[in-house]
Image (cartoon, rainbow, N blue to C red; front, side, top):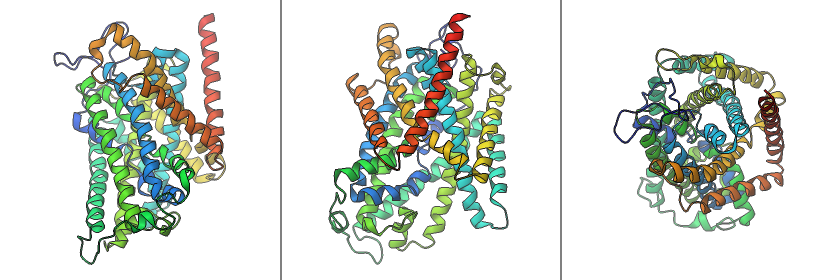
Length: 470
């Protein structure tokens, strides 16, 4: 299983030997990079803008929706963090799935996640370009897309420390914006800002009460927000390139999941307390609506800047994650060996080019056929995150037993209440998939994603048969 080479501090080295060959990647990411990557990786446009759709579905009970979705994401990340701390690898869950379940599982998890990241690249690049085009209409949208893709390709081709620094400051801006929002919102709730009076509970109990759409609204809201928690996985991929992989990923996972849940749920509490839930306009950022309501000047432009940075941050992180995933696949013979070429600075440049090349293709498809070809591609990755999360949980169930038997000293970060909470996470994901099947808006994503997953599984099965015959 690939893992990073020894970090140099007694007791911190990952396992080495035939089962754990050292990777030729750089190891210049610091703890602060991973911590901010964990915090910033999931704070994006889905929270700043997309959360309005969830509020419109569930009302104030969106708080419960975020708690349920966040709890599920937290369990998955704890399971993944356990494996990553014990066996750091640039392929992360793809490597663990292969070790636990066989080559077919590692192949499927790796390629599905790679496909997910490179398609989402197009969404992020296009979203950022639309904002930039609004600021400078004389520059066409496609030009902005090209500029962003080139800039972040160059960034990812340089030393991995550059990626870490980009993400550190991008994430710091996003985290700072949320912290400031929470402070201002809390002061407004208690009437401590100029020209404000205490809000009380009127917006939580009025307009139909806390559960205006009943428990069904909570469930529908969870379907709308659960995918906003995707992106935490990248921190376990990046951990293999840190100076102390085992300790770094354990610390990053511990801090990230709790703080992100606090930021998400805290933001929703502020929004639905300050504003009537049914006052939000479709497509409007609830953050902008709150800032406008408490008299913050130029609130719309402020949030545009924050969303712009959030999109570029996600683009950068996804390009990094996709390149490392395909590099790991190549290491294990599941992708062309040509992608194994590594620069003197430890950067898999061909893997970066392979990922960004498909990113450019998907961007072109988005610009030319946003409602046909690209829409099908986007639907095809809609539920992939849940499939990957399920493989993570199943892998942890098997690898935990192996680690307890053979390398108990490697279990520095343990899954809570093993195996019960791992099984609870699997049941939660199964429930979400069933709910998607019966939800008119989510059903196309589930069906197209299932088709994409089936296609990858067929390829994995054919490769397995050929390998056995060879």
